[in-house]
Amino acid sequence: DFEVEEVFKEEEGVLIYAPFDQFGAIQKYLEENQLEILSSGFERIPTTTSELSEEQQADVDKLLEKLEEDDDVQNVYHSMA
Image 1 (cartoon, rainbow, N blue to C red):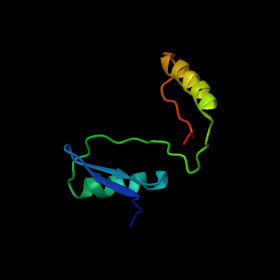
Image 2: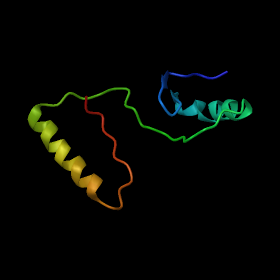
Image 3: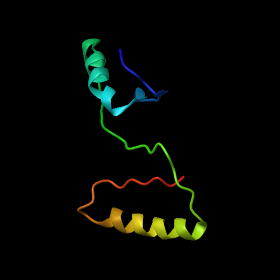
Image 4: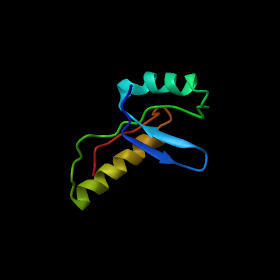
């Protein structure tokens, strides 16, 4: 048994959101039932978010843009609402 938070049906297949600690169990279940896994990975979804003023949000957006432009940066996460 495992936990699943959300399931979305898409044109290519099904998108499953679950807690990180359930990843292995879900992958094993899908493989045992011959369900093709097109891709898998992790997304960091904040459990709490921060409300910012328009000015603060603009400053953070500029910072995020600069970070994403850096070739050494692979992923950028934030907790803005």
